[in-house]
Image 1 (cartoon, rainbow, N blue to C red):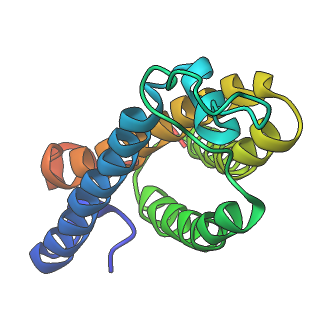
Image 2: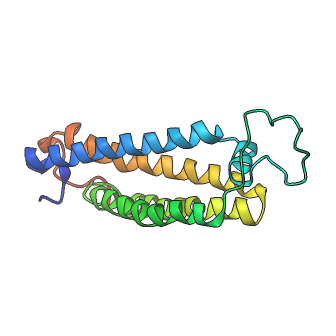
Length: 177
């Protein structure tokens, strides 16, 4: 495959484009699911992981608004973590390799990769920090989604633009390396 995406063959452009579109949809669904659970609200994130039911409440106490939510137990959290700890870095690695084929400043790519790494670490540790350290870490989890969402946009938009928005003869030199 050519180093520059705008000079790649049509079949490579289509394969990469289809992958990027599917990754965009997948990440969008993931963000939407988290939004449905928490509204990206630190208070609702805390309730999602810590629950809203107290063990010392009387049996005849009224139900909490929005229904009963029980604290996430460690095994429940590990079952989610073990999948995400493998798949998220793998997806971001593949997306980073595609971004590395885009003609742009290496510094911008480097910052994008570092922000993605930080966002992944924050996203994987956030639930544990909220559940077992402090509900104040709910903001940490919201920030992880902001970082990851920003990186995903770059990982998808830049290659798509280079493949379909830049003509082959438009520039034979890379955009500011």
